[in-house]
Image (cartoon, rainbow, N blue to C red; front, side):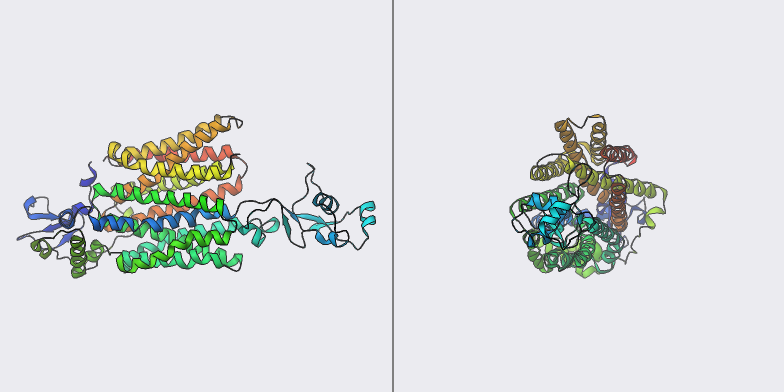
Length: 538
């Protein structure tokens, strides 16, 4: 089945002419099969009359670039901000008795040792009111948890860990912040569809960009880690909300033939956001300054109030025909085109009820597609996060690894344009998931000492999973009917969030078993690839 003939596409939205009933239909079921083709005008004709991919559409796609850079920054900065730091209890109380001690001498007298001979990181000898000679002669025996803070060895940058002392009994705080962030992603999956359908794509996007400013840029100035965790919840909602609403808006302004380029190009700027993060982390010594610099582009998002368009399809579905005609004519004017007046006169529509996530599961064909797509997004989420985690654990140059990951993302996103054009969406989805899954499983059989082979296979896995994300966005936009596209994206986004939560649970249960991680990632990605064969051909 060709993708352009699937029910529910914008290209199938029909405007009836002449003696035909004047209304817009949003699925094939709204039209009689015996109607003469000359009696029908599709929504495609309107977009073509306004300009298929003119200045207006190119500007719309360009408007997604800055938010995608910010999404990458906010999503991945936590990995950098929570890097583990060598630390020991602050035992400078002994320096008041003997100020000229070296660090080694200080630690030898005040810190207990583990069985392997290294100093304890989270325990210290209890302070005593003895003279120095007595301490050296008799030694200290009673131990306790760190009482006066911590000393961070080889500290070259101020991170969240060092500023808020997220070590020892507070070492689980970064993980809790990650869980709160994922809870934001999950909540966003539930509420954004309702917002988009009730107040429109335009207002929803603006609210999410406001969240970027308040919770993203505002993170720079958080006074405590509790506030930081609260802001992470807001950022999680913002990222999910922006992704769903922006993809829906762009999809409704573009023909199918242009969506692949638009979505893939927008995702390339996500990869550029990762490169930006790597460069800032390398050159900026304080996490607050890093956050201030990386989130500064949020200032430019204020202009979106005046230049971001609303979706004409949403305006039609909500019964606002005059506004729909106005935005279509505005687009045509910017593209130096004119929509024929007789075509605009036929834009007469009844208010169409919106689809829901439950509605996607009512009919067997759409239920099958929806559940498979949900599993694909779940497997992509878990595998993508798991593979990224495993690459970061390899004993390689830290900054080199981050840059390599960002470049791999960029190559993977760009390759989707060629893949989808040459192979089609279904074959591209299958190929990328199998590439990510099989290369991940192969690493299970490679000895750990072959670091270069592990790194090569890990990067291939990352290419597969990164490309699978982009293809999944493109494919989802085409598979879900117009009235159900918004809840469809919310549904798969929900499964993406569940995949991230499941990843966190597995990581906490088996933190030191990389082979187990690779097996789970490989099985999920590979099974998702084989299930993708059940999607309709395109």
